[in-house]
Length: 85
Image 1: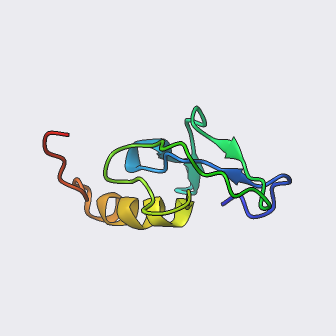
Image 2: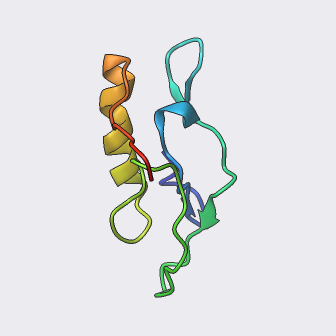
């Protein structure tokens, strides 16, 4: 969704609650509170951010979170079951 942004942006909290649809059902991303500008030369990935169940398993990757949010959006139910953390 942000492939043309300069500098690149990593959202860090892609989940079904942050994907909104406009009147033509085109997806828009909201809530950029945890977003970061991506420095591709950086090797410092120390902060963990996002919604439990949607957090990427390695360096911040929006595609991992989107993959978790997609079944929820298509089926209309929670894609990830969250217990006590």
